Image: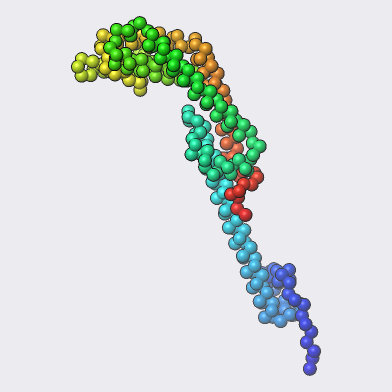
Length: 273
């Protein structure tokens, strides 16, 4: 009887080679004959190599898909951040608490984006404090105006509040280069009950006024609109508003790179694997 020789154990590298040869058109019996293995062994390891490759490709597809979704999440967050930067209000707390804020910061911890965002927060805070100062000064100016001294208590209260709010709005608009309201087009007098009128200046209302005092109110507004642009507070507001617009442009340029590249360098705690 012929003595059997023990075949070398089939390693993964050999199995992969058999799979490549099989896919190139070489039959399992031919491979078995050339390499000195039983045809059933060759077929078994060709199948195992095929399953191993399919599993690897499937895992790679899952990881690739997870990364695509991860980058999509970051890009969508960058778009949401860009929308808020483009508005007139500071970035919302909800957006700051979004996990993608952490993800983006971990991906790009040294990006100038974060410096610009800190500067923008500081500028928003400075503008907020400046607006408080302006509102207080306006209230004092309007309250001291002798043209309003004959008003009743309620009428004077409504007039001071309405004029203060309207002029404060005007100053914010002008400081950032916007047009603001126009007395010729936006000052409306609307008849109300008991012979009184309501004054509307844009979206600002002055309720329950004597029709005879409409001219006084309009003159107070007109004089203040000319006067406030010479205030130091207004000049400071202009500077801060200009700085804010410049910072927004810088931030939006940084975000545009993320949005248009669609891929962010680095890693974060939410990266797949």
